[in-house]
Length: 225
Image (tube, rainbow, N blue to C red):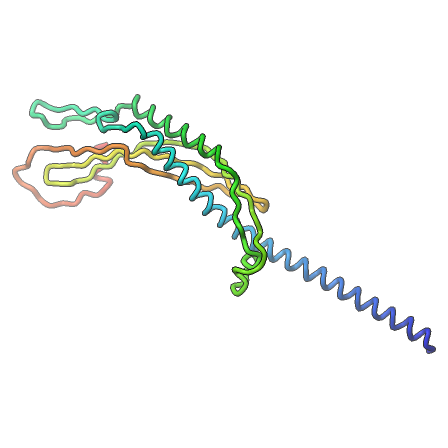
């Protein structure tokens, strides 16, 4: 084999080695991308859910505060009927006033949710790789979040024994939103709920001749509802 043939053979060997290295690099890059995608999606969805839930909770509480801004009294929501002895005989809800308040809170929450601008969650590339030592390293990958959802409202009441002949009656307004989190790698729906105390009152009854200590459960107390 002469020098020209040796040179030609050596060049062919180098090209084959270069081609093998190129194929290996492409396969390695594909494996890394698959690993990133596998770890990236649940991580980003988890971060997006936490951020969206925090944002939505702030919005719902602001909407409740706005709806209750003018002040709501216990007598605005509940009708109290007394018996001939001056004791509470019947509690009934003022459904008209309660529906108006619920609609106001729901409308405010819906407007605020719709006006929320898109947020971004920064995810380090090392975290997407799932390697503990690299969890906080690497370039930050921005992920957009678009909260979209419907709003529902409801009232909850609570009766709490606060004395031998006293019961505290609390009325809460609850606002719930189903938030749709949309990111480039997927989507997820989560529910966010906010409660706010609307009104409360102490219901005073007659002093019993005898008393046996007994802690009522929440279910037993709320049988009055």
